[in-house]
Image (cartoon, rainbow, N blue to C red; front, top):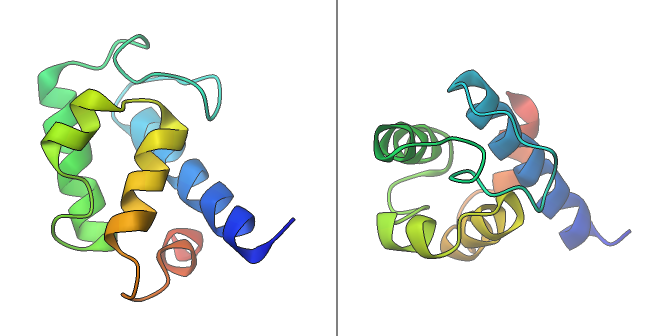
Length: 94
């Protein structure tokens, strides 16, 4: 597994944990948060948690609503935090 794959896995695990904390149980990286019961309020709370963890604009609402699987959310976070502090290291620390 490459370092990028490992980082992606850590961010995916962080997203799954954050969703679980918000009451949304997901089956894995291909789980869709809205199919699993997330509401618009849940989405806003998830975005706020992502911003606290990874920085402002790490998960824009439009991206979340268009691509709402765990793997797509993690990829968006990684893409939007490229060049910033390592998002996987931050996620692993929590």
